[in-house]
Image (cartoon, rainbow over all chains, first blue to last red; front, side):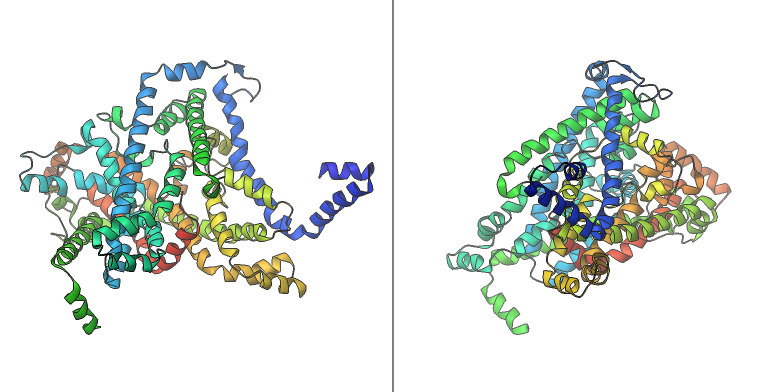
Length: 320
Length: 306
């Protein structure tokens, strides 16, 4: 816009005037479109891009009393402190471990459930199971954490009641105060909440598979399982790849809410994630610089992974 | 119908029958595992608090009572929380649907000069974020701490919703826009009288997603508004109750049961939580089955939900 006005004052060639004028003219003609969208563009820049200036804090000894640029710069001090902190290293491990568990369990269970749902021929039964399986997706993590706690409780939780009644163990197991169970509980809760929802996209992909492929397979004598493995699974391969690539960028998003809500002193060594570390040091202790440094580490890893995934995705699946 | 069933049966092998039986049993398990925690909570919420501590409540209340609900609704904070939750849900769903579809419409106009810029600015936000602390500092600098606006403003017009609506709008025939334009309709008019109503199916999906999001949030209340009691939300009240019971040991509960023998009708944290869980989840659980065909379509339109 600025250049347009400038070159209008000092015209260089008639051609340039024409293109520049037409840009300004087009803007004039499109004033309604501009009015409808530019305020929201500015809003998005304020809420998503302006906070990036806060990344400066990670390189400063940030004191809230001073202005942004009057701070003392300390270079990479906070990053060094971060990586010499064993708690942070443990948190990275926890984050990766829970992400990988959630990612792999999430994919396997969703595809398996979608395959089995696809085999149900009774439309009413299929719809009923689908509707029920979507339900947990609509519950908040606070509610899910409460349900998990109730189900696993040693007082009257059904899981412990079953374990004792079926004779798997003589005593009730304190699931939420033993570190070895925590990752499994998080993985299982994620599956419970999202498996039905995640089948939506696979079922859509399955319904777009050409029925003649199934007929041809039947003619060749393929049974139910042969068809599942050689027609249905290849049919959803593109969808699967796309989802996998998209999720690689979110590998550090192990989730925060469930871990935060279910944690207690006994299991914090396996339940604390990078996000909880940021919250603890940044907001609760008030060390903004250290918290921001941890946040930057997470963002940089995520962005790098997105770019790698984008490269791997090939032309037709480009994310950005 | 019957005939086709019989002819089908003729062609089914023993293996097939076994598969169908196993699959049916598996689906029954899925349904039971999915529904049981909620049904159990429902039973606990209608059962006497002290009686619940004795254990053994599964699918139906043993000592039926309305007391848990009466007790939560007699507390002022739950009424406030309910009001705030409902208002933030309704307001953010409405504003998001109108504003997001408006921006999405401008992105469908190929001649629009800022189309590319706007798309890039929004899409990039799907892949990075500044982080918790810079975000918190921004909210503080904008003086949005302890305001209702902090529930609505930051999330207005998200990239994912924008792309879903734009993808849908591209399937609406361009000739409609062109002929309206020839008849002298401006962009506001075209958007409001043509594109907005024609996008109703996808807008229902987005409204549902936004409503679910707003209704289920607790972290923004915790982070920004925890010191204003009149801005509390249902989910945040739930979260506070959850963390207060999280570390409660069995001995505590037993002590409570003993105390309860003297004073019956006392509400325990478990039964209070059960009642709030039901209050906080029923509104959405009643609505979603009716919107199923819309959100299934919306999900496939947007590719994947983030």
